Image 1: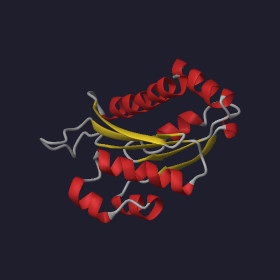
Image 2: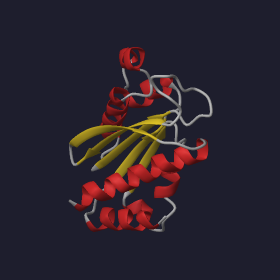
Image 3: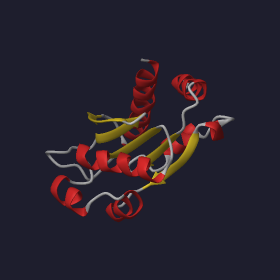
Amino acid sequence: MKNLTQLTQLLQQKKLTIAVAESCTGGNLSALLTSVGGSSSYFDRGFITYSNQAKMDMLGVQSSTLDKFGAVSEQTAAEMVRGVIAHATVDVGVSITGIAGPAGGTSDKPVGTVCFGFCIMNECFTSQENFSGDRTQIVQSSISFVVDTLIHELSS
């Protein structure tokens, strides 16, 4: 992934550290970020919080948030990334929660709905995207979205 090189250079040049919380991507973002030699200079940790219980236990997501908005929501992604920042001393936090399929979608949240949380130097924001394709493509699109978003944010 060409953009991975650009992201890792930005993290290293700016001396920034990153931690991530993943649900639907199941650790694939962490694997990508650590696939580069020298990644220990910027990668701190990854939380794989696939179940709602894991989101609550590891990241402090509130059960009321999950009940009201669902695991796949910008509200949950926001709480997930705040949990990353609270449990890891890093400059950049990312969270991903979504429906990779092939089942699990609803009319309100079809397969391919993925919510993201970002905290970069204490500036936090969320995003909801809708990706198409099979499970593998949705996971890959989610990871690419994170890499591209971080490049954009860290370059400005």
